[in-house]
Image (cartoon, rainbow, N blue to C red; front, side, top):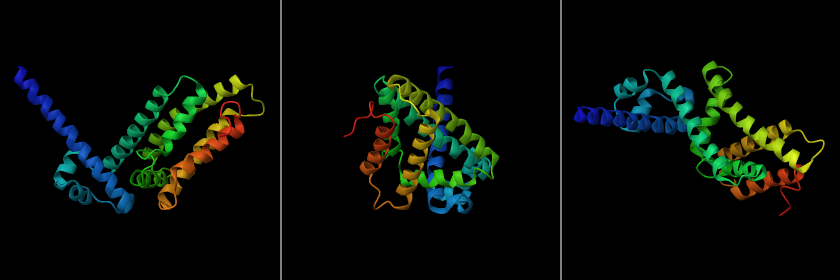
Length: 211
């Protein structure tokens, strides 16, 4: 009985590793060829596996792409929630940690960014992508909104709207991601973070003093 359970456990682990291998290969293929240009044969070749293995695990290109998008969000979600959990308890510190997380190399990575923008470009036309994106992004917006509201309350800031701050910060990081993707030679993470901090100082000067 114990031996049988061990075999099942090893089989499940092997399946999980194979799926991870295929998802990583898919990300690389999308970054090189885009969603439309990528084929299951490309993924199989990149992973060093047969196309039959790809079909066995994901059934179709549409399903593989959906699972790849979910994987990207789960990876980002892990980074996001770790930034919240590992930063000091103050709302200002947590918001800053989230902004720093968005420009760190493991998140602001050109290969990943190419895939993010490929999916965002199709989200309007593909309801499945739009639904996945909306669910995760609503979660992140709500957390950032709550942090902004706490900072506004602590500092008694007037004429500042928490939702506007959240929207501006999200737009800034999206724009910086695009700059990293399109202009990798001139993109500078330190400069990117300075631009974000300058905005935070402008709206919340007591919490983000001028450096």
